[in-house]
Amino acid sequence: MFLTISTTGTPERPATDLGFLLHKHPESAQAFSTSYGTAHVFYPEASVERCTAALLLEVDQVALVRRGKGKGRGGAPDAALAQYVNDRPYAASSLLAVAVSSVFSSALRGVCKARPERAREALPLRVEVPALPARGGPDLVRKLFEPLGWAVEAEAVPLDENFPEWGASRYVRLVLVGEVRLAEALRHLYVLLPVLDDAKHYWVSADEVDKLLRAGEGWLAEHPEQKLITSRYLSRRWSLTRQAMERLELVRLADADDTVVEAIDNAVDADDEQSDTEERPVALAVLRREAIIAELHAAGATRVLDLGCGQGQLVQALFKDVRFSEIVGVDVSVRALTLAARRLKLDRLGERQAARLQLFQGSLAYTDKRLKGYDAAVLSEVIEHLDLPRLPALEYAVFGSARPRTVLVTTPNVEYNVRWESLPAGHVRHGDHRFEWTRAEFRDWAERVAGRHGYRVRYVPVGPDDPEVGPPTQMAVFSLADDHSTTTKKKEAAA
Ligand code: SAH
Image (cartoon, rainbow, N blue to C red; front, side, top):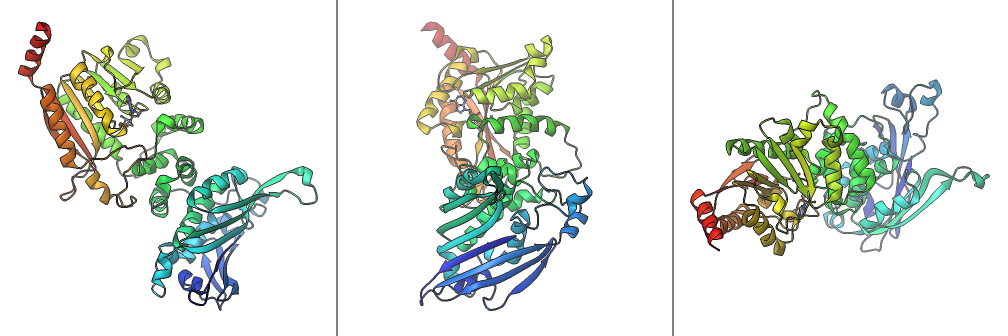
């Protein structure tokens, strides 16, 4: 497994600074032992004008197999020969990524005491990986690296040069050229090499989510292929993928592509069967659902609307609770509703159960007669998906027209964003969030809505309530003030 990183320079900014940035001296070849073999770092060229560092990983094939984790992609470990005949030693893969992170750990973090200014600036870089296993081929390679500012040369390596008619192998010769900070370039490789390989050699554990978010800082949240990257990086372990997406708030089901839809469909089943042996923090989404359900109980609501229900997790939780006699999920996205229907196994429900449940498509930007007459409406993480100028329309549709006795509105608290390690300062959590509010901004909006429509409002924190920045999710609980409802009705009757 082999990878080179080259840069060019001038007498004022010598290319050999690469040695400082990588914390590896250009003059000596060095060897490091990693859990899967020996990593060598050496410099085929090191002059003021050009400097190339090479990382070669010599995989200890047998050690790899003894660790019981040496399966090739989709490969069964059963064949006796498989442990000696697979592509791991030759191909750049997650092992190379692991080597990058252990041999160049300081460089990956952008730390360089000797040349701090060079660590901060973009360098003219050329990265070459002669044999990169790439499921998805040169096209996917380009899709992954081009949005990050690289000029990409990716060509399929023929299966056998003497027999072109055999077609391409699953390897790609990759050359990346760009003006990129070294730390960033290494982080791109650290995440995307295993993503392309799509075969992790070790068991994906919960801290992989942290690794991904750390390495993806500053670029993953904006990447057009973020879903593919996240799911492949986490080896399609959907509970982890969701956890990662939750934290980056990447999941946008409204525009999810079909493969994601299908995968989530499977994941829904897998998730239900998941054992409790795996430790993971309680996801914020779970806390949110619990807080919502507690408030609905407190309000004595039994007939409930979930407005902007997405893929129906809350609907499902409400449905499992016999105290709710009628549950209606509404969303503008047909795709989200399709997923919700599958999650709820709508087509397999008995008549009585089916009568408790309804999903329909509708936009909250318009008044809708079907929304009238319910005890409560929930808007969970929905308002921030509307452009601010559309918000008064939603306000009127819910508080003016549908008028349930109780309305619960949750939205992210932007002040808390500094506590999400993975979020670069000043970034909203989700690409589709049109705005994120501070606690004061949310309260200001909620007070005005309550005042205009005759509701009382109070606020409930969801998630850890940080003394400085508050909770990650803020919830407003609106209750219809009785006197007002009757006066409005009288007014309406009189009109
Ligand atoms: N309530 C869910 C989903 C939140 S994502 C949860 O808490 O997880 C926001 C959802 O609002 C998406 O499913 C999106 O399709 C929906 N949405 C956005 N604008 C909408 C509108 N104008 N009318 C109805 N639904 C809308």
